[in-house]
Image (cartoon, rainbow, N blue to C red; front, side):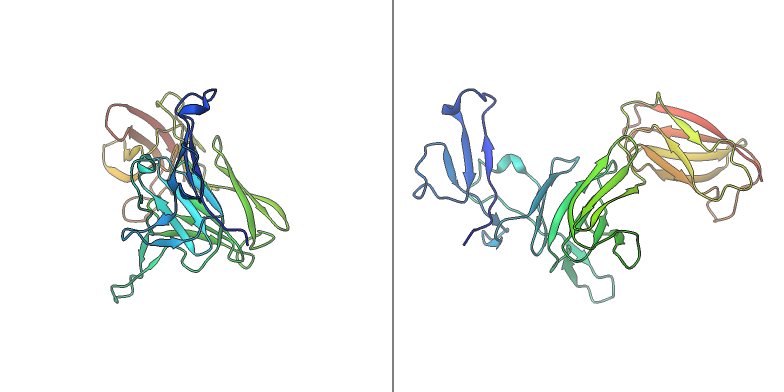
Length: 281
């Protein structure tokens, strides 16, 4: 019987010198007496108990956390640096509140086999599954943003093999057992500066029905939109390098024709920029 496991290898920054390598995997030091073996590594919880055996896929997010797809949902390693320093490093399951008044919660995608993971420009996670399609989950794993399956989307199958993202434009590619399909995601990789900011469409003509896109942003840019009198009409936080405005004010009403000023600030406030967009009704 083939056992599932995870394996971690560290070449200590000297790939040509195997003598200072170290690793952890399925075998104990007794089973594998190689001096480089730092002991077994399993998916342990806070009590030192094994959660589940091995994983099908792994992905590192923008915070440096490791997300594991298993046969029973998702497990996260929040401190990969402890792998060689702690005898039983903790792997966590995310609790998702039911929000039904019961005060209860379920583990993220519990009971679902996760076969593919990808992280988008806003640090959100796409999870491909066996038999349950695709889930887009919030950065912290507590909210389901989208759930695509053959019943509500064009994907050819609910069985996913792989997911990959073109960071330049946010296009997400899904490989299934019945072919490949792509989807234009909302998030792209954030920029380092505001030097490439632009707004489209601009001007926004009466026939335009979709969102107004502000792109070229730093990840998590604070976006405030005002009229020429300085009245705030909209504010949001960018998804990676993109932010979106539906052309409505804070009360959900379509704004009038005119010029609107878009004020941009990086998360720490160290960089600022502005842009303009014309609305024609």
